[in-house]
Image (cartoon, rainbow, N blue to C red; front, side):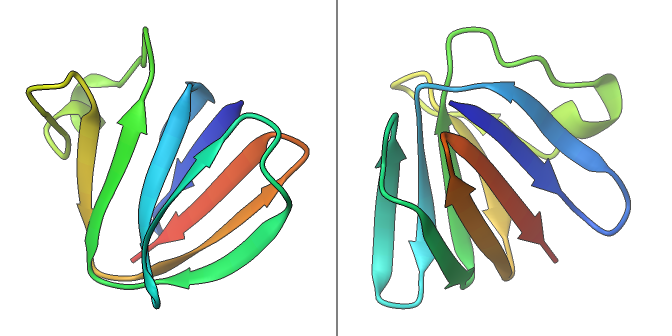
Length: 93
């Protein structure tokens, strides 16, 4: 799957991932390869990214933490997500 996380200031992530978990209105949900298309609003919480070699620029690296399980974690205030044909686009505030 391909993930793009975009803020008003910059593209924070653009690359291949194994899975992504996001804080939806009804609770956290995870997307894996070949997930059904979805569009959802996101609430305050953490975007959790599982990827083998996620490349982060020096300026965006400071926004992420790495959990004990190796997932990259990005706290967000709100946003929207669209998944279609194994491409995930996350727009965050």
